[in-house]
Amino acid sequence: MPIIGMTRREDITPKFPDLGKLRKGAQKGRSEDGKPRPGQDLEYWRFTSDRPEIVAAFYAAYPAEPKTIHAYLPFPTQEENWQTWREEYDAGGLVHRCDGQTVTRWRDSAGEYQDRPVPCPYASGQQERTRQRPGCGQVGRLTLIIPELIEAGHVGFVTMETHSINDLVSITACLTDIENHSQNGLTGILFHILRVPEVISTPAWDGERRAAGKRNRTTKNLVQVVPAARWVQAQLNKAQALALPGDDLLALTDGGDLPDDADETIDAETVIATAAADKPAATFTLPGIDAEFEAAADAEFASIPAGPNSIHAASAPEPPPTTAKKLRPAGIAGGMVSIFNEWAAEFAEKYPYWQTEDGLADRVHLLFSIAKVGHSTITADNWEQIKAEMVDRAAAKAAE
Ligand SMILES: [Zn+2]
Image (cartoon, rainbow, N blue to C red; front, side, top):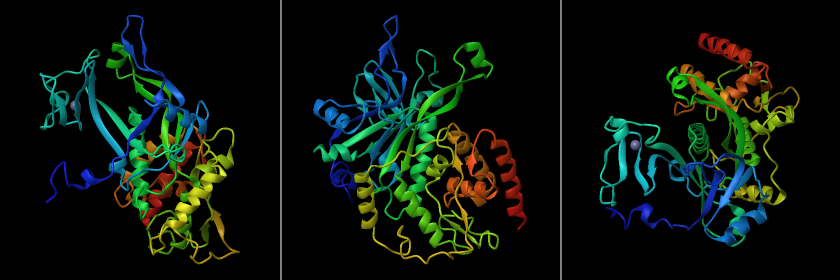
């Protein structure tokens, strides 16, 4: 039996030093009455570290206001790389950390930290959330390996921290999706960690409007975690190779759709790159990878052993060359990503045909279906129509 704190797997896993933090906001300020004020949301990443030489190495590799960071994830599973909690802080530091129900770490009246589980005082109703004391709030921390820092001789982890509900949901969904579709989990995949402006709605600030359930709309620079193009391409190739009737491994191809799908092959760029190709100005574009990273990603890709579920599709039979009709997943125009994600979750809940094995929305499958009903890109203009047509498509599927 492993001994806690000594021989458990997590105890013997090498612990790399924390090199620094990737931050979404500007430095904390002070309001006129001297109270600390959160830093404003930035459109780009801000890297901080206690060690100036690491900051220098970071900014030697990235511009002053980088919107995209290259990163690998150190662990195979979503949960190991991505820690989410609710936490309460005061001037003395962490007050408690909970999962929304049960507190797993808390500071007692003597200032000592306790790990004995107790109910969250805000969840149990023991303590009321007020504006002065809003209680525990959500936080997500993603552990990253930034290859440029490793190359500069700094081996360790960088933590990206976010407090946005939208980020927490979308990063969880993205990492789970990829973990489910990858034989080697999340390791060995080059990711782009992006900032993407999105209009989101938040509860109104002032009491009266808030009480009336009014919401404000603001633009926030959300986080997107996207596998580098190469990996997505490999997944699409695999889906193509495996697009046999009844094979629903990735469900990328509306696998059960024969015969109307029988003459379709996938010749897709990444989902996101497709959007970029359609509408370069207004769409969310996947930034280019420089040659060095392309080569590194290729090397990672090549090092993954081939097998029946491998992401290697090179040995797959070529699709019929002449009669093939190309189907690409629909792209998503800028500003529509979170709208699509929200809809996808609801839609898939209603129509299990578009669910992954875990019952989550299979967004790539949905994007293929949207392409199939005739829309190459999701925009604000065609969104209502797409939603209506997808309901029709679901009805048609159910009738089969
Ligand atoms: Zn709590």
